[in-house]
Image 1 (cartoon, one colour):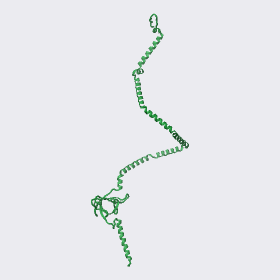
Image 2 (image 1 turned 90 degrees about the vertical axis):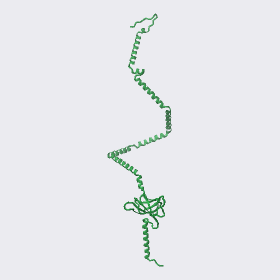
Image 3 (image 1 turned 45 degrees about the vertical axis):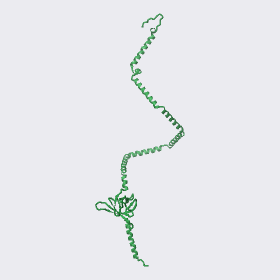
Image 4 (image 1 turned 135 degrees about the vertical axis):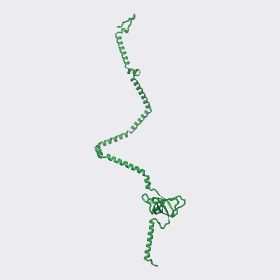
Length: 311
């Protein structure tokens, strides 16, 4: 058997190394030389940081890669993206190539949103493309009102802190320290024996309440019975009647003060008092005269009456 020379071995190893390097280079660029793929084109206004070799997915399953990116022309600013997709996946018409975030932290990918047809795209066709709103952008939109409120709250807190700083000047701090010191001295001045005695009295009072809970319950029950009795006795009607009587008495006293009626005239009129006083005086004179001259008023005669002249 003929021996293989060292030169042939070295050449074979070199060739295999070059081929492996070429395959690795294309693999790192997202090209698999041993897998047949279809190529599709997508035009975007913005790509949001999309780069070559970023994955192309369908429902989260990787079916291809981003093959290349370049400007569509020199004036429009639009970007033309080439997608390499496995031939086993037939893309229905109206399928959209949506650029979205690959993770919460970083990275982009293209998510193929399945179309409803009819028919399928062929190799080399152009798909509809759009840039999806990122999760961070959605969060910013959602929390924008909250952010404004937080900014306002921070501003208010800053104002409050500034006001507190103005209030808590050196004099205020000195007064606060003096107050704390006074409280500390007061706490030291409390006699421990007095404190224990107070706690003992509280415990005894609590125990007394516990021992007499039955009596207290009975007293409360009696109070409840008295309350029910008062409620049933129509005390409101009695108070209303008393109020009516007091109003009538007030009206009567007011009439007496104004001289209405006989009693009012007697209390308020001087003429009635004067006449009554004069009548009393006349009656007193009559009684004096009767006492002095009884015969003038009382006279008995068997033979008839004699007129006794008045002196």
